View 1 (tube, rainbow, N blue to C red):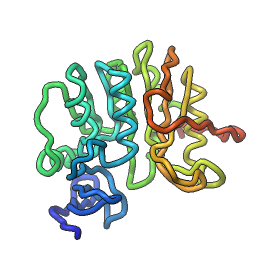
View 2: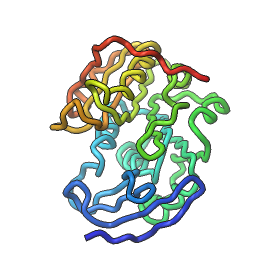
View 3: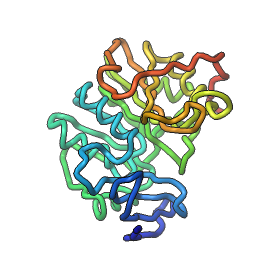
View 4: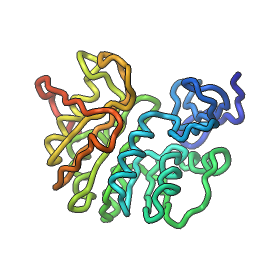
Length: 253
């Protein structure tokens, strides 16, 4: 049974928060639009894994890289930062979330508490990187408009900006909803091309196990700057490497 505990509009969109089953687990989930897409969520069971598989993969990566300073572009209701603040006592996290209403919902409905190690900026990722010169050990990009990645965070110039904001041995991780083979791979392939053009090493990991690679699903793309960490030891599901001819890069208009 599903229970709507809040619905309404923020500055950027219309949302519902629902208590009920999600992928076989009892959970509290933030949906955008009229149940169009699950944007954030927390489990209400005894399983220690995060509710969304892609968030669990990002958590596994971060807790093995052990960054001191992290940037998250696309924060939602801050479930990943909250988990990392609990797991990594020395981490400091900057979150860029375009919608200022979502951190408010995080505090009211998802258990966000004040922490000096967490700073939230109500702007978009590219504007933040233009206006700030900070460099990070770990950058996560999880920016979506419903199920679409905004163009501004997947261009070649965006990847160059990510690299410029990483420290000497920094790591970028990006959540990509796409297929892998055939026409459904048209989202992943230009992003992979931009990453390989920019970073010293690029891997693409499955967020979940058991889905056909012909179907849209979550992938975690990871770019490494100036180092080659054994990421297959950190992330539960092995890497795949898009091998078809490189598509045209997405460039700024």
